[in-house]
Image: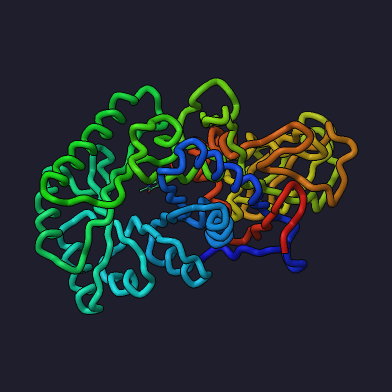
Length: 400
Ligand SMILES: *Cc1c(COP(=O)(O)O)cnc(C)c1O
């Protein structure tokens, strides 16, 4: 089910919501622009509902600050963007068999990586009396999608044979550019890609776009920029890999100086129930937590169905009135308990921050990811459709 991006928290919903800070999204985008310069186009990757932020709202916002392309995983994601009025080119990484007519109807640019797929798209374009631009993905080391290098020849023969598909772009995907320990492997991928570019040119193919760089490539490998980059995580202020330095923030070098990326999403709820319990009181499923002292326990209307992961049971922490309160007991499907004994002024109705900043304190998606043994992308992608997304234009001011 697609996420509904709501401009305002509907009065019918629980007091649990995610704020999407569009001002920070725009600032992150401008920093990426400053880093790569004006001659490199930017394909903003907004697959998976823009990593859980809401694809339509993010696309509208990025279109207005100059995103050149959008990247999505699936044709149905691209269709939703077109139906919402997005007009920029959309690169679709995963077109599957049977979706060829939709690609033409919605003016999408498919990524192709096998000869049979090229043939099907050609047949469909011919039937529409059109010539379809496609981007060919080569596998230089990711081992996922992409034509294996030894099968490149068959793909090129397909382009020579079929007249209704045109090679508009050549791309590859970097597997480990976020890990400095694997820099050598990344450089090998980049070198293989440049070899493919030369091989294509020798055969008379001159694709308009040559692109390799995801967020990590944008941050650390200028030689991987080609003339188009495909950042996802950086746009949202998220990082996928090991911390590139001991600094808390992810920093981009730009000609105007260093820029620390800003997390675009924050996750909020409110205390709906507050009680005092005696020492020795078990809390939650499995009674995994037993109070060691007389305690004040707050109940929050958020749980793992919302994407507040069960792995945070007895381990996570939230912010109440600018102070940390630990998660106690198991996170359940719809409810989470936190210990506010040390925040005596906490009240029913108080706002609680699960991801975000308040009073100089913060909880990042990366922190939750580490506790859950995953990456920040999975945390924000996992915030479910039950959680309304509230668009915020500048700190505190909701749009709508
Ligand atoms: C997801 C994806 C990206 C963006 O990756 P980030 O790490 O979020 O920057 C770029 N290209 C392709 C093909 C992808 O699948």
